[in-house]
Amino acid sequence: MVRRKRGSSSAWVAEHERDPFVRRARDEGLRSRAAYKLAEIDRRDRLIRPGMQVVDLGAAPGGWSQYVATRMKGKGRILAVDLLAMAPICGVECIQGDFTDSEVIDRIANELPKRQVDLVLSDMAPNISGVVAVDQARASALCELALQFAQRVLRPEGTVLLKVFQGDGFDDLRSQMTAQFSRVVTRKPQASRARSKEMYLLATGYR
Image (cartoon, rainbow, N blue to C red; front, side, top):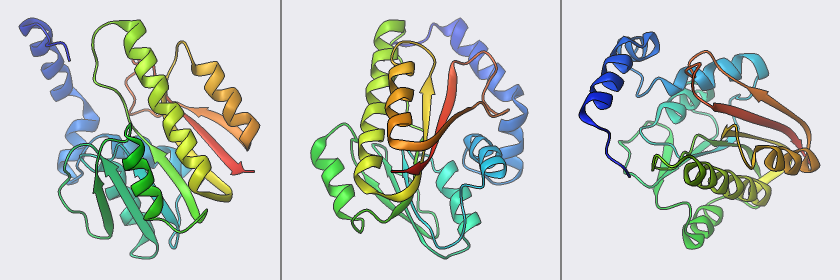
């Protein structure tokens, strides 16, 4: 990972501190501003309900899992996965491991009942190198892995929500999802910074 120059790092910190979603997350005791992205999509598309089986990929520090846990009200199962250690969340099971490692993927899949997962969430993103082509390729590879995993564990009519970045590989990924799901739409929550290429692909009705 390339270190930011001191000036650009200071500018990023200043922008981060001014972000209203960052301030709101602190005030409301949320682990990250990312919770508001999922909350907005959930309100619009009604993704989460009590009793579901949910897998959260790239979960740390836990903003999405924390939100899901509040929505599920102690009913169902949430499995959170990340390379980094994550402080415990009531009602959430955590697996620490590298999702790019096939053994880790097998371990996660083996923790789940066969094809009974209702929802796979992925907010994964690669470490940024600063080289656009390299970063886009890494992001696309993570999306491919997340989609393959979802296809392995989702029940019929299940749902997947993937963080994606506009650029090379986006159209191919969307085409793959369209072939496997009844409906595929894009979402750009307000909590995603406008200048970011980040957006989300939501696929429902797994075939």
